[in-house]
Image (cartoon, rainbow, N blue to C red):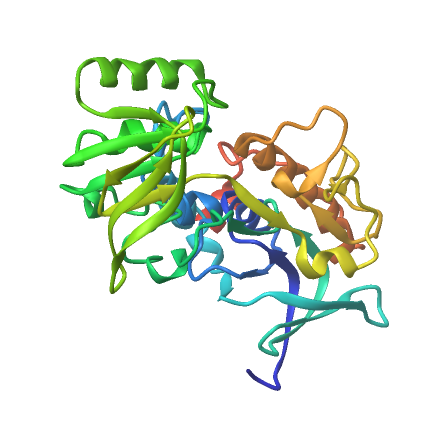
Length: 343
């Protein structure tokens, strides 16, 4: 906590891929940015939930891991020297006298900014915890809601619970390193990509993993170390499944948090924007990435990149009202290349 008032052109709330790329687009236009994120590192969900999960729809990258994409974006924005304020949440936002904003985080860091860019993904996200008695005792040692390093799960007896994309994706990624792996789902229908389901069933046929119908009702173990789980099968009978690791993937609870109290127009817990400049109902406040909404919106990282580029054009008009913006290409503009340190 500091009494200092940090003055900057732009505050970006959220340091996921879209927030990071916004630094690049703003930097090209000489707009200095500070980023605030509740997580302890940049990268958003890519770094926090699936750093080793492959992503296939980033242009020019046939395959890139979540952490790898974060690292490349961090390298790309290095010339603009952004300042990160991690493990902080913006709790207060209000107008100042000249059209800009005063912001304060939950630990008392204070900012004065001319524009605010909300790039907070789905807001503050937390995994849905299964309603199992005593599960808290195993969290962080035997029960995990995210996979940050595949190698950490080598030679473990793993149970994965769930039937969505995350459950199936991590079943496929962990099966090669696990000592044993069992997927448990309450039915034989899945909310996942058909190709992933088919690959999982093929592993079952090959004897490389097991799939069992049912729901986990009880955990067994001591001192934080899981030993087994009781599963109630669809036939009503219960059985004991030996395991030393449980990965429950029942989705995430997304909450806007304090953003919901800033007077912005909302649409089903998302922030409506226009598609010319991605500005919210409040002038000088922009929303880009998964947290915004407009007709035809696709929740894709590449969509957020596009939104960041158009947002930066309008932000420039607010920050440099007397300066005409001349559109330039990085491939041909010597001034942009100089900013990027390109010889």
